[in-house]
Length: 141
Image (cartoon, rainbow, N blue to C red):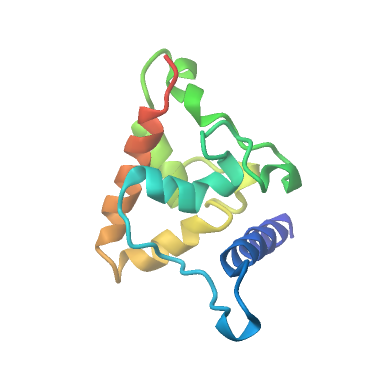
């Protein structure tokens, strides 16, 4: 139930933000896939609503979640100084250990979408790898 609430909340905010300033006749739902493959762009589009633009767990949706998203800038510090790229990748695609805040084994919104697109869009692997690299780049050492 929490998963569906979170999914609805994130999609509602996305639609509201994407349609701000448009007339009723012009409203088009936001895309699920963006054109840019850059890690920072993908992070901002897919991750920042919960994790915040700086990755500190303070995104606009964070307050509505039962569990506060973690500060992604300290993953290396919490892992003895080594960035856990494999674990981050596993969390993004939904193969990592389950986290209650992520819903049933995947990210509440983007994990299922990434998996669904993987078979039809070869850019998904590149996009996910770039998100992982971007998260590594924002680590505070």
